[in-house]
Structures are given as C-alpha cells and as structure tokens.
Amino acid sequence: MKKSFLILLIMSAVSFLYAENDFVYKARIQQRIAELEFYGFLSLWITDCDTGKPIQAATVDISNVGIFKTDSNGIASFPALADGI
Image (cartoon, rainbow, N blue to C red; front, side, top):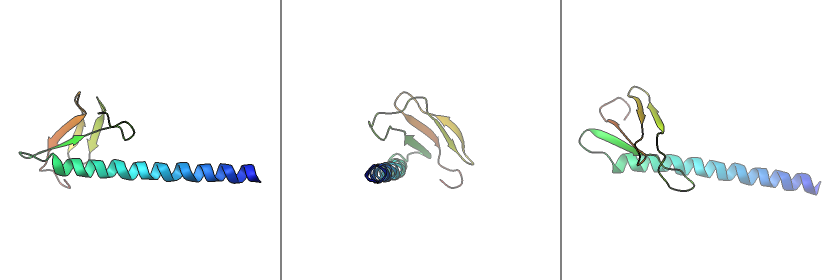
C-alpha cells in the first residue's frame, strides 16, 4: 500500500509540474508577442522552457496566417494584420 501511495504521489507531482510548464510556455509566447510587435509584423521567439535556449528550425503554424519557420535565433516573423492576431 505504501508503494502504491508513493507512485500516486509521484505521478501527481509530475502532472502538476507538466501543467506549470505548459502555463509558463503560453505566458512566454504572449509576452513575446507583446514585446516584439513592430512595423506591422509580429515576431515569436521560440525557446525551450527548461533551458531558455532558442529552438532553431521550429515550425510555427498560425491559423489564417500561414506556416513559418524560426531562424537560427529562434525567431519567427509574420504579418500582424491577420485575423485573430
């Protein structure tokens, strides 16, 4: 019984941490959209949540806008005039 409780406790902790990382990731994206808006274009800076390093060659798919790839610095730029942006 102790072993089952320990496993359940570990699974709960992992689930909580995963949810926290997802929240932090979404918050970072929203922050970067606000910070990097300029001249009718938006840029997303895609970084790894654990290390903070830019993710190179990531694909960013935004509905009604298009599909964009990040550069070597992890930045993807796209027009800001699309619906929902």
